[in-house]
Length: 367
Image (tube, rainbow, N blue to C red):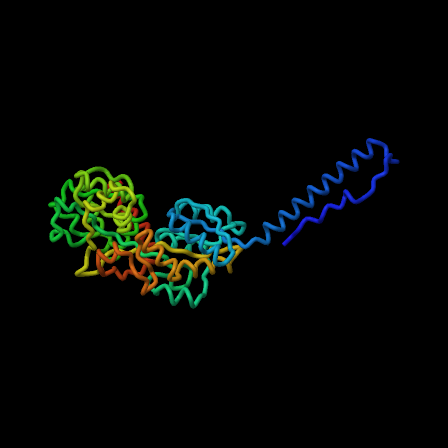
């Protein structure tokens, strides 16, 4: 720890009259002030350089994450500095900054974006027995470039009043004529939709996936818009009867502080599609160490903390996401929804099929 030198100037006897001319005395005083200022800046710089930090570029925007970062600092003394933006913006920023980037880790809400960052040389592989033990192989990059933090399930949220779930079992069912004018969805630019389409391309092939997208567009109740909460709100309001959303949006509504949000959440049912075949589409929010991380050791420590039992419980209980770490209890809301079968598609394929998914959406008119 740097300390400024004690001030002994008052202990030095000064003559009643100085032999220096007054102008010289003024210049001497000015020089001493400059010297003190320089020393002060130097000391501050040394303090900044010696401070333990980890710089996070994150697409996640939840209070849960901020609380976990504070907890990490309490446990390790390492301060977490966060830059928040969309994954595409953060990836572009990493490319612009190059080796001079201050970022240590990249966090995204989609495996496809992590794969893109890896392919562009923006991430570096890490080796950690703790990470490998905590995160199953299906939720991490096979070469160690990124690791999942939470699982996010793409469900069908349906009106409890107007929909019999027995007639709604698969994502493919949304293409049936019975759903004409009854489907609400986000735009094709939304990464959740893009990755879901990539999973359909992998499961059905590009031609059948495109035919599905065209049929769903024909069944839209209104043009794609809004976020997942907006889709749930429109189902509750009767604008549509079924929506594609991530499950944790319903969980957050059901556990909101205000009664209106809780009532909104109760008006929709949660259906995990394709349970009799490939399973529900699962994506991950995840983390990777940047290629030029200046604080690589601290970055690895943060990654290991975020897959600890403490952090994984927080993701499940406070944000209603599914933990990636096996054995971590789910929140009561998630337990009430029950177990479900997940699509075993390797997550890197969400990135590999990303461009094909975007082209399909464009041709299908899903704007």
